[in-house]
Amino acid sequence: MSTPVYVTETGEPLHAILAEFATPRDLYHAAEKVRDAGYLKWDTYTPFPIHGMEEAMGFKYTILPVMVACGGLVGAGLGFLMQWWMAGVDYQMVTQGKPFFSWQAFIPITFECGILFAAFTSIIGMLAMNGLPRWHHPLMKKERFLSSSDDKFFVCIESGDKNFHPEKTRQLLEQAGATSIELVEE
Image (cartoon, rainbow, N blue to C red; front, top):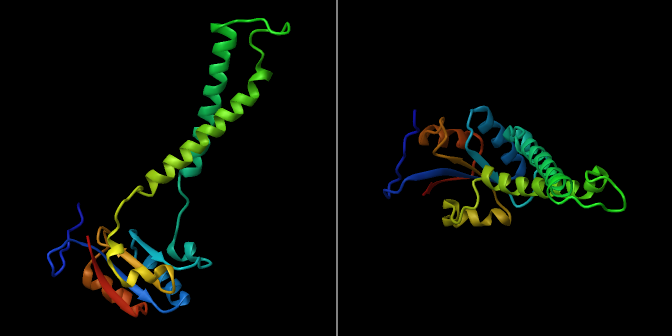
């Protein structure tokens, strides 16, 4: 089942509903109400971090740490395998009377390959999970939203959410204490 596409009065597709709140406390309680209403595609925007906002929004842990650990282990394994192949199989050379496969000498490169793969996994995974890079965001068209980095507090509920309905969502935000509510076009 696909979500319906809502169209604004101007004929543009609706991206979201943006609601402004007067204080961080109002935003925090609004986030709890939006979370309890079952919305999944929404976010809060503030000029500074608000303690406990993650819990109020109902954030869950992501799979990114598991991906980074797997990437690091794969990198370490490939680094160790590469050195084993080069020193023990492909180009055997006696160095200081040690055996061809002297694993103790392989530890620094193994460690560095693990770190390298973990770093790349974290960067690529974070970008992919956040939907980045995104060169344009519809919220940037709203003059009121530009003050979110200065002194305003916002909740934005996207129209792609399965629970989204323009009138019901507006009513929820009004009941949560929004001082201003705007439609955001794509």
